[in-house]
Length: 265
Image (cartoon, rainbow, N blue to C red; front, side, top):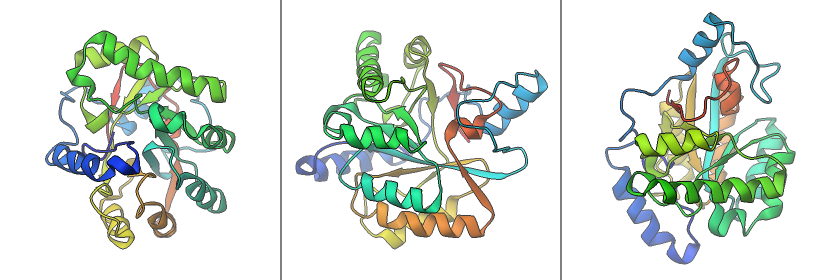
C-alpha cells in the first residue's frame, strides 16, 4: 500500500513516472474502497480478550499492547538497494518492522535481502507481484498478483505471508474474498510521509512524527532515497515519547490476523 495510495516498486528508470502516478493516486485516499468493515488493532485485541481467543500471533510473546504504547513501523514496495542499510539500523536499535514486499523486480532481484528480513525477526508480508490496483482486476488476476508473491516469499523463507497491503489501499469485496482464500489479512495505515514525493529526510521524519499515535501503523517505503536516512530519527524520537515498536501481528495480539479482514488504525 502505499501511503495514502502509493508505494511502487519500480526500477529507478521508471521511478519518476511511477512516483508521479503514486502522488496523484494518493491525493485524498488512504482509505478508499475500505467500506465500513475495517477493524482497528485495539478492537481486534479487545475482541480477542472478550472471547478468550488468546492464541498469540507469531512473534508476539513478551509484548502486551494493552499496556504498552505500541506502534508498528512498516515498509512497502521493497526490498531495494537501501534495504540492507535499513536492516542495519533496525538491528542496531532493536526495532522489529513489517515489510510488505513486491515480487517483480524486488523479491526476485534481492533474494538475500528477503532472507535477511525474515532471519532477523521482521514480519515478511505481501504487497502484490507488480503493484497493480487490485480493485480493478478480476478474481483470477487478483489471485495471480497475490499468490505469485506468496510463492516467491515461501521459496526463500519457508513461510508464506499472512498479511497483505493492497496497492494504494484500494480494496473491494473481490479483493477481500481472494485474500481470505489465500490466508491474507489486509493491512492499511494511519501515518504516512508521502515519501514517494520527496527526498527530504527531515520532512519525512517530521511528517511521521506529527502523525504518530498509539496503536498506529506507520507507512514508509525503503525504495526511495530520502526514506531510510529518516528512520533513525523517527525511531529515537518515538522511543523518547514512550512508544514500543512492534510488528503488525504483535499490534493485533492476542488476536491472530484474520484472513480477509481489513485492519486500519
